[in-house]
Length: 126
Image 1 (cartoon, rainbow, N blue to C red):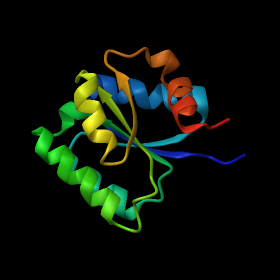
Image 2: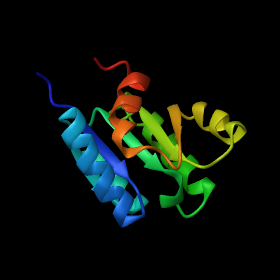
Image 3: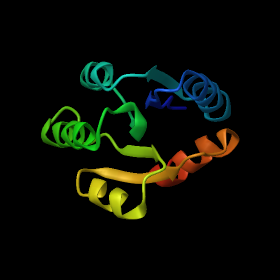
Image 4: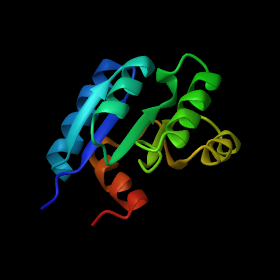
């Protein structure tokens, strides 16, 4: 069985720790975490990841998120990594992010016990 490697970027400690625990327990994935967008870039470029979950609030502003997504899309090492937003932003804002490679958005607050299932469905992981 393949162990998926996920990067979770979440600025709230409790949510980050609980989400990591649930994803690892429910799905058996290896979950790397960070609270900060600048740390995320380093991990994305140095770790072999299967997906990235991004809490929009972990970025100082929407422009920072857009720049990060553009950077991921333009880098041959990272352009293939699917990105899922964890967000409270509107559908219109998410559609703008889709143009920058975002696969989907999971609305906050989300159910921690079904997060792994939602991610697997979005990414078509069996």
